[in-house]
Amino acid sequence: MTRRLLAALYLLPLAFAPPVRGGGLPAGLRMTAMDGSPFSLESLKGSVVVLDFWAPWCVPCRTSFPYLDSLQERYGEKGLKVVGLTLEDDPEAVFAFLDDVPVRFPVVRDPSGRAGDAFGVVAMPTTFLLDRQGRVVARFEGGGKEVHARIEAAAAKLLAGEPVPAGTDVRVAPGLQARGAVKAWQRGYLADPIMDLDGDPLTRILREHVHASKEAAAGDGGAAGGGCGCN
Amino acid sequence: MTRRAVGTDSPFNPPARPRAGAAGLLLACAALVAAPLRAEGPDVRARLLLPSAVAPGASAAVAVELTLGPGWHVNSHSPSESYLVPTSATLSAPTGSFSPVRYPKGVARRFSFSDKPLDVYEGTVRFEAELSVPAGATGAIAVRGVVSYQACNDQQCYPPARITLDGDVKVSAPTSR
Image (cartoon, rainbow over all chains, first blue to last red; front, top):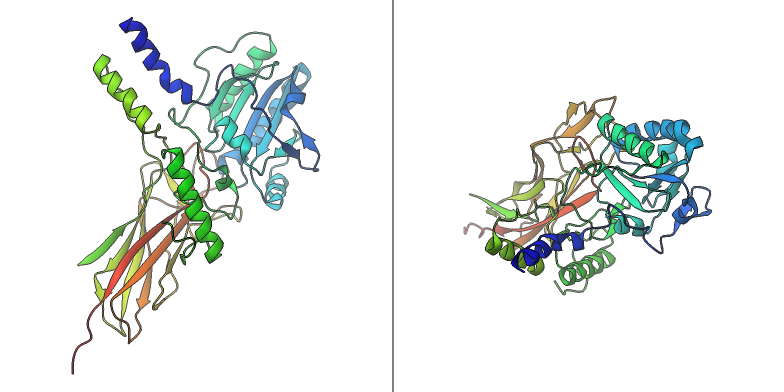
């Protein structure tokens, strides 16, 4: 009994972790292709998907994109689909990035940031590998040759109908969880430190209200104060 | 003596490590339930450096100090590429005025993910300005500093963020004639 209780307690933190392995696609995500048409990850079921979260201000992403483009080129006929997903709310910044780093795989946007929250993304690049059933089977944080090699090895396994081995994930920050306001991704909207990743939900909501109230009153990022006075 | 107002540290803190053993495990899990899991992230800290007092009609130096932990960097105020988010500081106060903020030069660093060196801040840097106090000022002046940045390590980049810092500068009593 004691051993079972201890085992359950050891596993308790996993209940708070976003789905990394075996989890299905988060429901209700609305993404838009760069031409404005709606895009759905569900539509890619049947393919092995490399879903790459990126941002225009992310320098490592500029190295990853050409690699991912070559991955799509080399494995596309075997059923691989690469998708670049940005939470950037400024389409001009996205287009400028793509002008510098053109790719042939689809690039989609979720300015609402819900996808970032749903997948637990807090830094860029973060790449997910989805199997043909749309399940997230691996998470890769960061760019670089080692990460790219692991993405490719895992994708090749899935394309061959083999399971992705345990330990495939690349976690730069293993304890990382995203529970703050994803609107922080918006270029020009700088995240206030109230985007507390370690705050309790009620405190975070209160701080967000105070911050939003100050910003609405001051109009300059809140530096001049003002707002509801409830801080 | 320089008065310092400590602002908000990085919202990211390293996760607590669980202890071995049943009692320690129960304590650790109780802590997890009481306080949500902490997350790792950019080691970026800031503080506001203020004089303890300024005479009416005088000026004094103030600064926002930014400290990056080992392995972390932010873009300089004049980054090497237009798409990079610059580091900026603003100072404001309801009384008095600030000179334009002066920024240090960045250092050119080459990272594994970039072909070109980037102009960045590392370690500790200060953004300085002068606060001019009106001749008729009395009491204390509330100073707010806001530093905006976007931090990366050698693998990932974190979203743009800012730290707001508050402090007070006492207005010293005018000299009687």
